Image 1: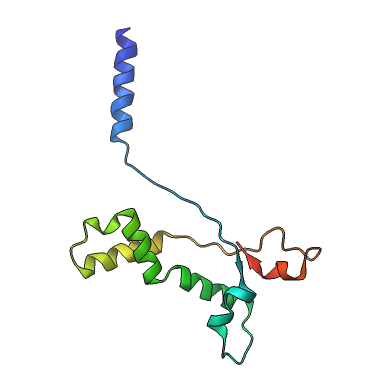
Image 2: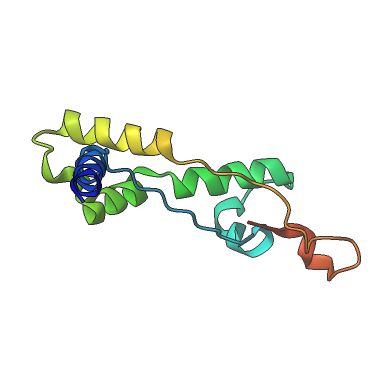
Amino acid sequence: MVVAWATALFFWLAIMAWPDSYQANARVYVDTSTALRPLLQGLTVDQDIEARMNIVREQMLGTDKLERVAQAAGFFDAATDDKSRTSILNTLRDAILIDMTLPTSARRDRAPTADRIFP
């Protein structure tokens, strides 16, 4: 019984000492033909898919969007000046991974607009 309690105590302490880490995943589908039309209006050359996706990336990682995320998550609680807020935003921006790939449903046997939708 003593061995069981000692083992349990050891593992409880090990779990409490374990650093907190959080991870979230989200999948966002973007139809580049409609979502980007206001941003691309006035351009004389039709943008290729990679350029469109870079615009979407810039919109998602914009400072105003990241500020709302950092504020909601409480990252700005310890920030005292603009320099620390900027540092927090840069750290958050570097930690976000955006993978732009065609979904499996965007095959040629699907609807003609399926090749413009990205997760």
